[in-house]
Image (cartoon, rainbow over all chains, first blue to last red; front, side, top):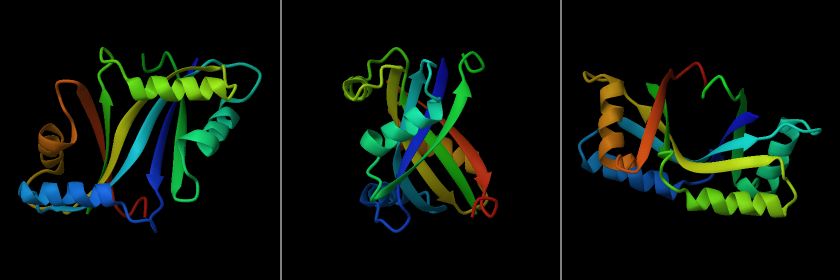
Length: 85
Length: 85
């Protein structure tokens, strides 16, 4: 069993209105040291190991389902279960 | 300037319906090796360093705005800008 941590973010060239809104809220709370906020999605995926390499399965799922690759980019990191739990 | 990576997840004891839905979709695509998916929020925050320690500012913002600490837990990691960019 492996755990995969996936982050999906808008590409830098794409405006992130949700992040802009949260940045405004943070400033209204008085935290003026916050320069920028960008918001993305985060997935923790548990994968049973079988024939196929975990990396390949995760890339396919990200491309097909988790990310809109036109506007978003994704990164993932595979960690062995048992280390963290 | 420091960059802070924040992840906010439902606590393990809280049902994550969005994650369940995505798990169902992944299974319908034929990826049966996926055991579980949980979904959270991800924030990349740029902070100007001033008097207050960055960790304290981020904890306050998470508690007040980014996470509902009754149902969600958050983790963050501070990285120096300039290393990644």
